Amino acid sequence: MDKQVILADNILLPNTSDMTAWACIACDQFTSEPEYWQTLSNEVKGKKSTLNLTLPEIYLEDNADTRIEKINQNIKDYLKDGTFKKLEKGFILTIRKTPFVDRRIGLMTAIDLEEYEYSQKSDALIRATEGTIEERIPPRLKIRKNADVEFPHVMVLFDDENREITEQLYKNRDKYKKVYDFSLNMKGGEIEGYFIDDYQAVIDKFYKLLDSDRLIKKYSKDDKFLFAVGDGNHSLATAKTHWNNVKKSLPESEWTSHPARYALVELVNVYDEGIYFEPIHRYVYGVDKDKFLKGLENVDGGKMRIFDGENTTSKQGANDLPTGIRSVDKYIKEYIDQNGGYVDYVHGDENLTKLVSARNDAVGIFFEKLDKGDLFRYVSKNGAFPRKTFSMGEGIEKRYYLEGRRITK
Image (cartoon, rainbow, N blue to C red):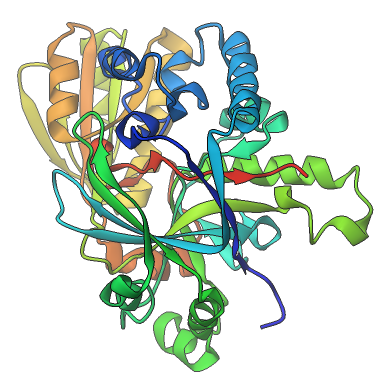
């Protein structure tokens, strides 16, 4: 293949004896649970931590510009004081145990943002799996614009039904150097990492997934579809936007070599035993509950459940899952535009039930689970799902910020 979709780069790891304090969960989790972030802040106070280098989205409306300035300064300070150690070019095989799965295997590598598109319908090698909301990019872009290092929580899926790539690396992991092994904070489980130095052989295996006969058999067309963004689509869209801005000031001869062209992600086989899809529910609050529920009666949300704080009502509409979610989201937006209120996107039945039960002006809408085996086929045929259709596991299973990578020269 003549394109460099996958890049082996110099991954950064921290020089710290307290890796548990260092690694923190993705910024877009627990956005309605300030107690999570306060507890985490107390746990890592005074320690080297990626919490000092990222902006939890719960604070987007809380003096965000000042927080972003501090984040970028912290990154510079960590670079100067020797907090980071730079590995040789290669990948990191990650093995994650969560409270819900015994093992999830991933591969940390950089991907080429020139080969990624987040439009709803795309034929790019790397594609979004859900709709991208442009308004969510600017606050993240403020951080990346002046940041020297990226810390990713993006998880990108690949379609390897024969389990010939990451699973084989896992079987042979003892031949590689272990670079970390520790417990994640806030009951996030355990994680191990192994440095993969024979990266070209791994890259070649990924490119074999683009064999035309294989693709025609799977998708009924020769659709060059290598990677689908599973988690962190807005973060990757931010990286793409930043790169588009950077290259405007560069001669084309420098485009290939500039580090901002690439983004560090974790690649995960969609068939991995540790990958399961959970629905993302709608938490609507600050509304006239009776009025909101009455309007919702006329919306075909497909198969869904509605919780009003006391009772749960099951509905079975004619729409399929994506169409049903689009219909519900359209109604929620129209209601809030006309009457006020708020919407948040919540992982887990228990979390949503707890949030709705705590208020008298809230409604919870529960959606069904997406079959992960249908993901690539659906996106190939129809394009991206509606935003916030599914989550890969529960909130606590999201990727923690751990590895870093320079994005400036």
